[in-house]
Amino acid sequence: MAYQYTDCKFVDIKNESDVVKRYFIKFPDEINFTFKPGQFVMLDLPIPAKYTNRAYSIASPPGNDNIFELAIVLNPEGKGTPFLFQNAEIGSTVKVSKALGKFTLPDPIDHDLCFICTGTGIAPLRSMLLHIYNKDIPHKNIYMIFGNRWEKDILYRKEMEDLAERNPEFKFIPVLSRKNDGWIGRTGYVHPVYEELFSDKRPATFFICGWKDMLNEARERIATMGYDKKQIRFESYD
Image (cartoon, rainbow, N blue to C red; front, top):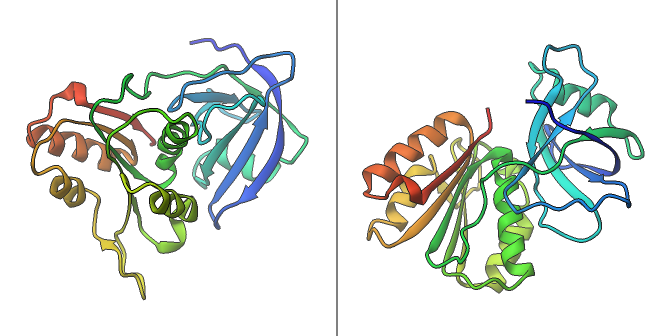
């Protein structure tokens, strides 16, 4: 598929961990860049590859300043992320497509939402969550079940904890699969967590984003719990 690209600029770059960076990109003022929470953009990168475009979910909620955020994890075996980590600088240009994808919130939100993610798969779910609170969108309970290996990898942790503290209907549940000294939260994998939370089979919409193995297993398990596939939405990150 051929995409149309616009020359945009990096306006900020933050090192979030040893392998994750947050990139803030701005569309030119003469273009009104709009997107729905959960959508992604394609970046067309000057890399030596047959396909030079890469898809990245937008991590920020919609605003009116033409700036959006991407949370990107380094894949040393790839070509796209090493290029960004080594070459992207504040003020440098990058080619960006319009917003794409159908991984978006239901309207209205009349059931509980269960966000299940691993790694930078939290990006589109963060966009949805912040949009709900920024716009005071009516909603039920929201659960963010976030799987990582190490405590240092819990992206947006303070922001999520603060949101949960201010909004009792939002539950932030990080889950770590490796032994982390001093960790008192959930351990293992994300699957038992949502199976426990929704063992009563109440109406819910599940949004899954992250590593393909996790995603496929979650889809199977949630279906086995009795939920219809229309209630299970997903975005793969491999």
